[in-house]
Image 1: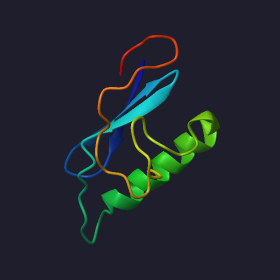
Image 2: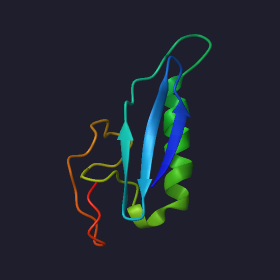
Image 3: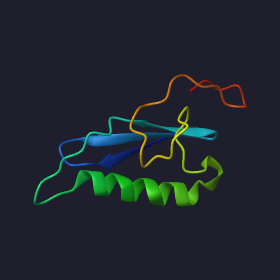
Length: 84
């Protein structure tokens, strides 16, 4: 597992990366004249999924593309038997 800590303003959003999927935790973001946390998170996720094409732009347990999915996934099993 690899943890990505993404600056979204007031706090960090955490992306947990596994060999068979990814889970996004705490997607809340700051939005003001100085910083757009939503844009920062979207740019990070686009770069992440450009490198992880096997995930097809989706978070584990999500049927929606990440641009519209802000709900963390439920427990899911990887093909290797590792539980997310």
